[in-house]
Image 1 (tube, rainbow, N blue to C red):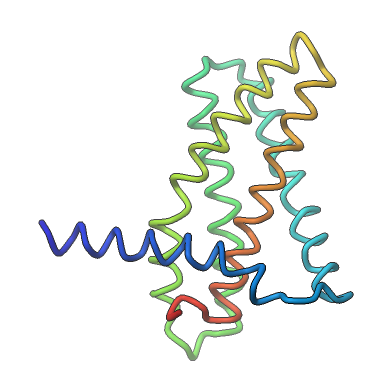
Image 2 (image 1 turned 135 degrees about the vertical axis):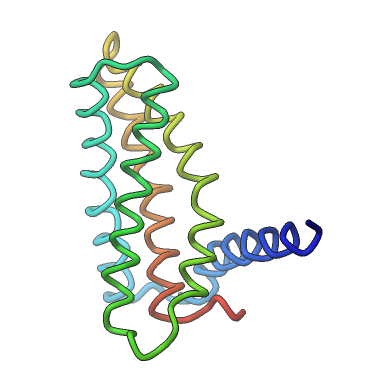
Length: 158
């Protein structure tokens, strides 16, 4: 039991360490770094608003909306990791998948809660709810950027 918990904590710690390491790796934001950040933001926003649209369509309770948002966010991140692992088939991708699989669920649950609150808020106050959903898009874009860094730059050994 102790070995398993240490394994989980080690991978969880690695995910957050890589997540906080990104700004130091990108010391000066040049044109390609800014373009990459904008790409992740453009990728993240439709996923968040897809969650909102599905929450409206199925009209579930709060807890079910959180789980729906968690499922959509995790699916989007898993597909992105799978696509990014294709060019690196010669290199074992099991370590980045483990780090992502253990590190992202906590963040995706938290983002799912905020997205569900944004959906509820959007019913009465459309602008405030849309603003809250856009606010969820920024951390999700950061998580997608962390996925990119883990797979392409191989910083999971840091």
